[in-house]
Length: 246
Image 1 (spheres, helix red, strand yellow):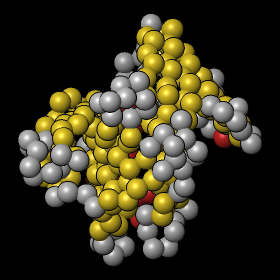
Image 2 (spheres, rainbow, N blue to C red):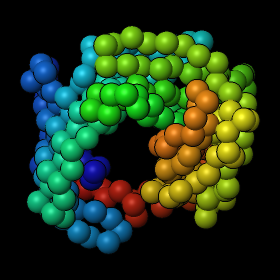
Image 3 (cartoon, rainbow, N blue to C red):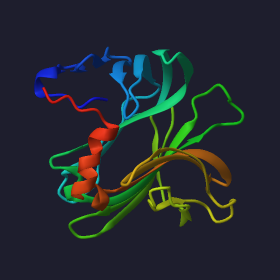
């Protein structure tokens, strides 16, 4: 989305508008209306996305001792409907929605993290929303301590904690970003199937990983805030995210 000045932002109890795009919560589902121009190649993206949680909204999890940074799995098990007119794209299926928020810039509290979301379908119930497992591996900046945890969410709102398997390396990205994922050693080695986003400080990829005795598809991301803090990196940001000055 385009970075816009304060005058272009309107925040209400159940609505957030940023320029011509908006999010609205009607008590049952989240409506996302998008009207943007992409970068660096300018192309219009316009349409609607609906996120309907299949379970009660989750609870925020504190990522540091001071409570300045929190991860909120808002709707880890959701039905998602995508209806774009530009480009012409329609899709329905199960999806995921979360949020990170903090009392200070993220780079002040976090050094690196890797995160992955694994859909765990039930073969006996192919039409039922799959369970969702989330793996977090975070290094805090102030004390260099590490936080590793796993959570599984189901469509009934149950949350189960689990100990992630041994972390295994993944190939570095084109920008030489290091990647890794917790994957069971008895499963085939994890693989990167596709890299959807590759930058000097962030990658987002589709991978395979071992969990609960089986190999699964997963959405994976790596974040390095040491790279993000570099002045040259911040100078490049407007190339990928348009910025409206006034």
